[in-house]
Length: 273
Image (cartoon, rainbow, N blue to C red; front, side, top):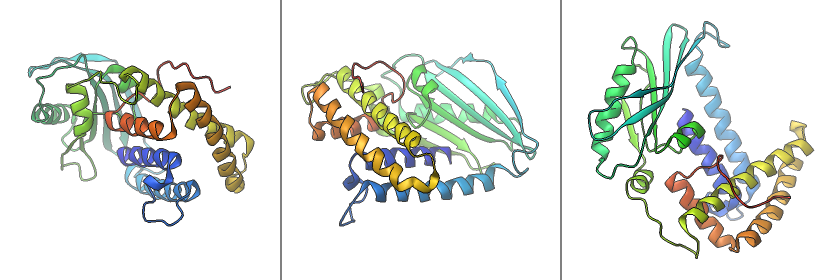
């Protein structure tokens, strides 16, 4: 469920940049429509999550255990480290979440390797054979710390406590296994990663400013309009700073999502004010 919410968040960000990419069948795609759809989706997901994850009600009988960071040895072809191992007990059911990451790039790793490895890790993490387990594999430690949907692969055993689901993002996997330093739109990989980071910062900053200006939930239309105004203003400033067009900016943003670039951590030269 956390993954689905993360995907919904990405679609929301993409739609806020260019509503046409999300509302392709709409005659008049607007950011307002994107916002309303995103709001309804997150509302439904939140209600569903509460139904599944809180059998004790309002966090009753919830015990959280934080285990220290440790390194897991791997006998396949590479080394993977454990960033954190969070264990919760809700209503007598153990819920375990792990974020793990590669110590470095290994070109000989295959998707089958990861599937076998992650399923083994899930079974090892399963405390009593009936635990709900989620494990996310990230390309680097920085990605694991940031969290979100920048994972390469994940494995889970949720809902019925028996069915194991493995998922891999092929585009992120290929970008990690076969990294390139190609120049696109007259920008190096490092420059495009910086632009992607700056774009995410603009989106977050604009929304925070709109929330400060219009705190009342009933003023959501004013909040939205003000956020739109700020986005347009700061996007133009960003385009000028990096000498790019809106079209190039959109392409870089999509590339960043597909390759799982960092969204929150890192340095960039763009100054919003």
